[in-house]
Length: 128
Image 1 (cartoon, rainbow, N blue to C red):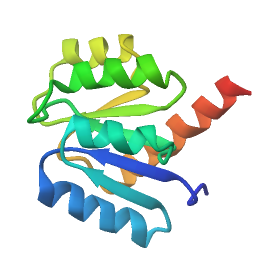
Image 2 (cartoon, rainbow, N blue to C red; image 1 turned 30 degrees about the vertical axis):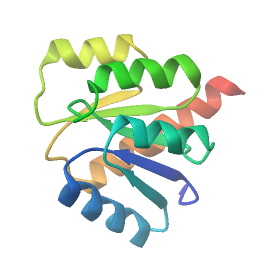
Image 3 (cartoon, one colour; image 1 turned 60 degrees about the horizontal axis):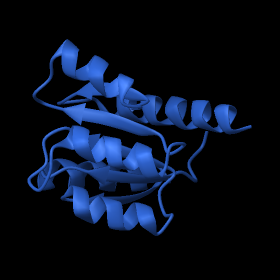
Image 4 (cartoon, helix red, strand yellow; image 1 turned 90 degrees about the horizontal axis):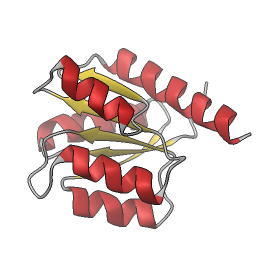
C-alpha cells in the first residue's frame, strides 16, 4: 500500500473535505485541504502534493479551468475530478484535459482511495 502519498483535496464543501481529509490521515496518508482553486495552486506550487482531488465547482474559478492550469504547469501531477454536478460529457472533457479519473459525489472512501492509488501508480509508470 502507498500510504506515504500526499493528497490535496480542492473542494469548497468544507464538511466533505474535512471529513475526507481526516479519514485519509487515519489511514496513514498525508492530506491537506484547499477551499478554492487559488489556495490549491499555492499548495501545488510548494511541490507538496503527489496527487490532487479536484471539485469541478469552485467558488473562485471553474474547476475545469483550474484543471487546465494545473496540467499546464504540472503535467505529470495526477488529478482526479470530483463533482456532484456530473454529466458524461463533463467527465470525458475532464479526461481530455488531462484528469486521471472522474468521480461522482457522494463517493465511498474506499473507491476514492482505490482511484487515488491507481492514478498515482499510473503517473509514476508514465514518468519512468
